[in-house]
Length: 282
Image 1 (cartoon, rainbow, N blue to C red):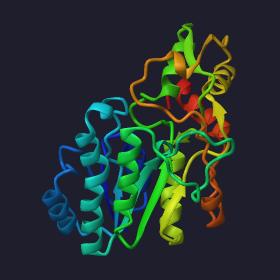
Image 2: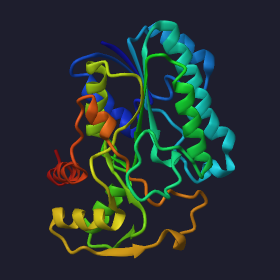
Image 3: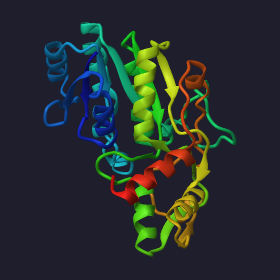
Image 4: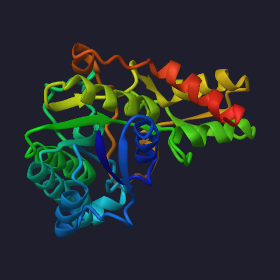
């Protein structure tokens, strides 16, 4: 397949490009090569490349900054998707876009599935939800909600910060009251390719590693995998001055993904593979 990847220089984009290049013809475009907030540029680029699939890994991810920069968040996470959907429709391409757990309020007591009503509490979450709606303007589309991404060519996630601190014998601050389903970018890339190969029904899918845990539990598992003392500083969300509210409980269910034949590894399995890669230098 001929595939265009927007945001190819980012954390998820790098993993998508690395996996898809092994079996597909990939046009990997970083922001300097395709700014998805420029409507005309998007239409022209997609028309020129003529991809069968457009995968959007570009996003406005500055969660706290978005509270004072609503226009920037809307341009990068919402209006840009209107352009990508139009371009995909014009060329008959499938559009793949990545959503977020921030579309939920975090008040649930069990994992959210795709039928749960979104209720974003932050500007970032609102902009991402609008982006999901605009992505659906493309008849053939997949919106894959991910959260707490880790992995990729440039380690910079919360999990990476915990790994670095524990390996250096420092104390890692970790939330005890925020529950997540981490997403290993390699596994997200695998699921993306599988959905396309299966020609699964269009729509929204949750795409995270199976299971869920608090950040304190994730930190303890990292310490176990590293075989180091679990120097973890318990932190409550209310004690950290974050401008944008975060959903406290945001475990996501992969049931819909599983129903079409795509199984995600557990977060423990994904974390073990990632820690082994980081410590072995491979």
